[in-house]
Image 1 (spheres, rainbow, N blue to C red):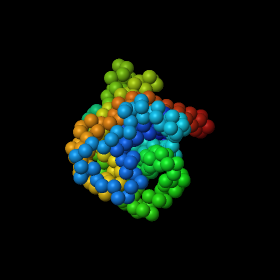
Image 2 (image 1 turned 90 degrees about the vertical axis):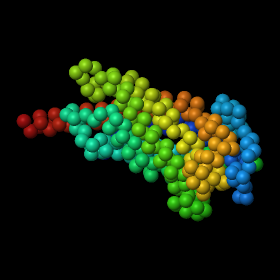
Image 3 (image 1 turned 180 degrees about the horizontal axis):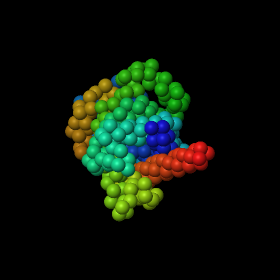
Length: 320
């Protein structure tokens, strides 16, 4: 159990360092219609107008170059502390939960293996569990990415740092409506997302196992291929849930509204394309980031196995 937790933590750290700049671009694309409303406490809900909100960015490349030109390259890493901690915590809980759910379903490594569908279901359950640990970090991440971006026009920073953002969020909205804002949207992303994440990864691994061998015989290249494929599958499963979540966490007009209400509102006012805004760059950055997560996780677990094996050999030698 401790090994899965530690390996997941290390994997989450590696993946987030790779993908965070692209995550910033994704969130800015998803929430660009809220940038003009961020500091307006009297802003009306988009629900009351049929007019499409003006776009700030023409696409992912424009958003990336505009952000670097306006605020500098390091602005792409603005607010990384919360998501970095969140990614470490999420992947630690995710891999630990996945291992435990598989055990409860009857898996015994080397003796009884679960079917691919059962492994995918275990991933879905693990994703649902991990979402409760992840959501507070998601809220703070979006606040830091979007609110400070909106404030950059007049040079006024809404938050002085991570702790100030947490403090203001709790003071204004409390824990349930503040740090857990958008929890339903996160569940709608994590459950189907992790069904596909683990399902695709395990599926790729199964196809690469040599005849008469086991999953432990696989090399880093398979882990990278499986992780990259799993990352794209994860974000493709139900991407609109992430768009809705970003809007609920960043746009005051949506802050207290229900998931399906916001989903339909965005669809009616901006069309289906708005729900998938930022998917391209997200899928692109997911491949290397999730490849790193799985490869680092598997290599860390291999290190633990080798260490335990040597410890057992040393123990037997000492007692013989």
